Image (cartoon, rainbow over all chains, first blue to last red; front, side, top):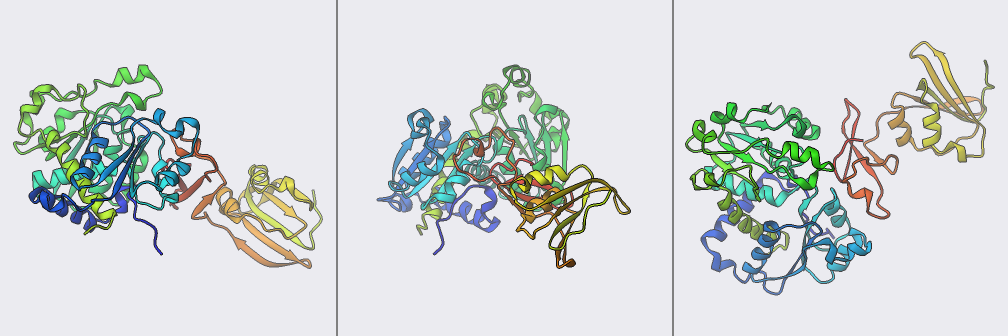
Amino acid sequence: MNGPRHLIDILDLTPAEIDGLIARACDIIAHPADYAHLCAGKKLATLFFEPSTRTRLSFEAAMYELGGHVIGFSDAANSSSSKGESVSDTVRVVACYADIIAMRHFKEGAPMVAAMKSPVPIINAGDGGHNHPTQTLTDLLTIWREKGRLDRLTVGFCGDLKFGRTVHSLISALSRYPDIRFVLISPEELKVPSYIKDVLKQKNLEYVQTTDLEAVMPELDILYMTRVQRERFFNEEEYLRLKNSYILTPDKLRTAKRDLSILHPLPRVNEIAVTVADDPRACYFRQALNGKFIRMALILKLLEVE
Amino acid sequence: MTIDSIKNGIVIDHIPAGRSLEIYHYLKLDRVDCSVAILKNVVSEKLGRKDIIKLDEVLDLNYDVLGYLAPDCTVNIIRDGETVEKRHLQLPDRLVGVIACKNPRCITTIEQGLTHIFKLTDRANGIYRCIYCESKA
């Protein structure tokens, strides 16, 4: 007998499966009442060993809108891990009470360890600076809804490309679609890790690395902004030196395409000026809403609810 | 300098010069009861200088470890004074419990009883990555 299906890395899903999730999410948006009771009697456990607002709330909202229930914790201090319990033991226990688990953990690879032991589906809701596949699904749904396609795009990633897990996952996912050109914009210290560049090289995909956002702005169809995250640095001085590397302002957008889509996984701090939100090209609040719909589609898929 | 030829045992040949003690350590040869000879800086036509390890018993060696540390070495199995098998090693696809992940953010740093596992992601350049966090070995 096969074990449960998990989502640890975006590449666990085939492009056809991702297309299916996007189609399901679009159907949920069009016909929400049809989905309101599909998970009645089911429980989602949200195990958040690291603080999160939107990811956790969007998972919870997704399960409630499917008619299911939610249990869990939102801080490692309130969990048995603070007593030294292993991830393996925690998921074995929680699986006794829940039908599906969404886990965020500060250690990279923790959801994979959970999946190795769990009898119920595990969804990686972010593991350190490593992967964040449901944010990637959110990003893909957003690009699909804004552009009507997931191919033939020049996609700029800007900011912290070293620790930004959303960047790593989205690059991996987009690398499977044809005619995607990557523009990687970051300070020298926050360039994408070598394993991501290895993937691009192996697939012979076009990418450029630059430190100059304004120089490449006119080329971009998508601009994916990221926050320099304080929690990823061991050294506060280095964080303070790099946190203001790129700030997107209306002035910098003057040379951008009229149909540019600006994405950001949120929360933003100061890397996008507040006034940019009034620009119709700013998609990040629509993106946050999309996160709920795609997570609804994912929960249905992993629970095998038709 | 000469070492007596062995009647039954294993000769690990073509070890890059200077790596024999590391191999001795990783193969846990300090724990075996048989005789172990380590020859360092032996003149070699192929390598210039090489190391050799000789064991006077046919033991069950961890060839994954050997393949990782010295992928071009040769293992000769000797029985009754004759070479009955010659193995040419290569990089193993996976390394299980051999090396530890150095990424301080990796789950292996805190999870009790979790085996460190690496997979070969780039054979041409000999690159291994942790299966949990994908950091390079």
